[in-house]
Amino acid sequence: MLRSVHQCRCTLGAALLSLVAAVAVQAVPIDFEGQPFLAEIGSTYTDQGVVFKNFEDADPSDGPKFNNAAGNRVATDLNRDGPSNTTFNVTAVFDRALESISVDVLAPASQFVIMTGFDANGNIVGVQNSDISPGANIIFDTLSFANVDGLVVVRWETDQSTFGTASIDNLVFSFAPNAEPVVIPGLDEVAGDT
Image (cartoon, rainbow, N blue to C red; front, top):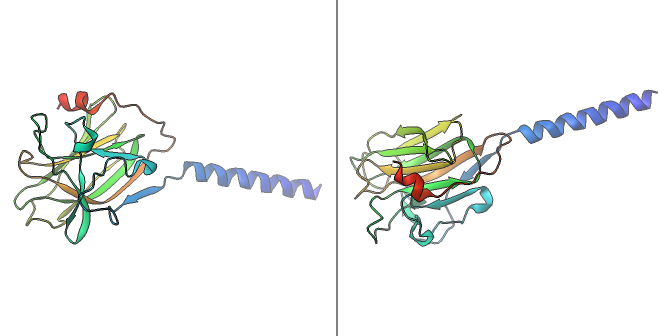
């Protein structure tokens, strides 16, 4: 009898540990280091649940690139080769809803970075502005969202986004517990709503 009580406790303990592990939210860090200079970021981090692109351009080869700034590799949108590309921006598209996201930002001197969050239907679910950049190519602020319902797309751009580009570094995010994969209708449709 004593043995079966012990077995029961072990089984119950293992089940509780499995449940806690399933519910625990893991932070996913991306620092962009070790990537080739000026290569397209695109689907480099698909295994971590995120793809990078330009918010207003459906062409996957026209998205943000790995760039150098502040002594680090960062994500920067450097492309302006068509009329649909009216702003510089870095956009992250996540494969399921986020619980939180935090990122260091860079911008040209005297500009600030606007971080805009969207749900899968293109609705704006959060906006945060950085401080004004004191100089080019330096990390000057950290922006974050937490507990924003349905957050799956995040765009970073400067307040003067037709000629000044934002860069991001030290991205850390966590998916919402039990978040299901999402289908996003297309960023062109989402971009048309803003």
